[in-house]
Structures are given as C-alpha cells and as structure tokens.
Picture (cartoon, rainbow, N blue to C red):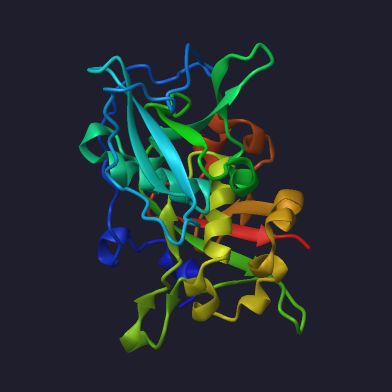
Length: 289
C-alpha cells in the first residue's frame, strides 16, 4: 500500500506503542550551558555513593564505558551511573532513561539534553553542548556526560509517533517514488519495522532519526535499500560531510504534492515545530546525491 493511502489511518490502528509524558525535576538542570562546577562530578570523594544501576562488565579489559551524571536536588549534587559507551546520541539518551529510571520524572527523549564535562580556557569545569550528529568522535571511553532537562522544547509541543518514508528516483527514470510504510499483501499487511518514529522536535533531532533508520538492519532487510541510495552505507565521516543533503517534506493531503519544509526551519527550532507533521501523519525524507 503506498504511503499516500495512510493519511487517514491513525496509530491507534497500528501495532506501535505511544510514548509516556511526565515532568522532570528542574533542580540544577543546566538550563543555561555551559555551567561552571567547582570540581568534576566524576572525581568522587570517599563516602559519596555512586548509582551504578547498570555496571559495565569488563570484557578482557576492553569494555568501553561512559559515566552519566544526573542533577540530584535531594543530595545537592549529582547521581551517577556507568553504562557501556553508546554508539549514538539517541542511544545515550535511551541509556540515561533506563539507568536513572524513577529518578527521571520526565523520561521523554525530546525533553532531555546531554552535555559533556570539559575544561575551558580558564581551567574551569563546564557542561558543553554536544553536536549529536558527531557523537561518536566527540564522546569517548570514560568521558562524563550530564543529563539535563531540555528547556528549548516548547511546552505545548505535541509528542507522539509519525510515519517516515523515503523518496528516491527509480533507476528507469520518472517521478520520485516513496518507500512503502505498509508492506505485504492486503490480507497480510504489516507495518514496516522502521516506518514509525518519534516526532522530531528539531531539524537536528530529525537528522539523528534518519541516520538511525538508514543504518538499521531492519531497514536494509525490509526493502531494497539500494533504491534509497548510498546513505545506507555512509561512514561517520560521510554523515558529518553530507548531512546537508538530507531534506524533509510534508504531505498536506492524499491528493496534494509533497512540500519541502522551509530551510529556515532547519536553523530555527520554533519554526520547525510548527511545520513538522503532527502525530499519526507522514514525514518524507529525500537524500540529494
């Protein structure tokens, strides 16, 4: 079934879960980064407890780990966790919500921002925002990352799930075609395993989502990924150099043409949140080669 036929079909009719929505503590949440701290939270004095909810087991001494720090109002300091070094920014947020569990009142990924602990030119410890697309080259073994509330998200931004489809030019030529969201024969229809994603609250978050989908095994198994193009095999360097080639589109209606999200919204999160499709609707993605 072509994706254009799904505009009247809601997620309640499809086998996908809805995200939770709870409010996170605003204690020492690093609202205005970078925040100077008198000493690095990772340098733990004797008697300070560390929450090792998920301890990284050693694998011949080669296990790579990441220290996570969550502002703790009750302790007037930080709560800690150690996790295996995540592959992506999105994976790191998932790990944070898992290991801190009940300590997070608002575990919605879009409400969380990660910052790395670094020293500035004055030799002061500060929390620095992370370029999430380049996570793998910026956050390394034994680094420390703070888990803070993302104050940049509009309070009334509607979270939920959206469908994603990729536009591509057929090898035989002709107009742009779109990957199918529902696969199989009519009596055996099923949702493509990569076709439903969290509604991205920014262009930057949307890029991460696209990268996660295109590099997922489920994506290459679900369709002929060669049609979508070489982005399915991009290296980390390729993603850093070519992310500007990824464009996003909305579908106003079943009989309407696809419309590109204005590029001004790529730099302005408030504009993006006004233009990105609402939950249960479709976001189109085209990688220009």
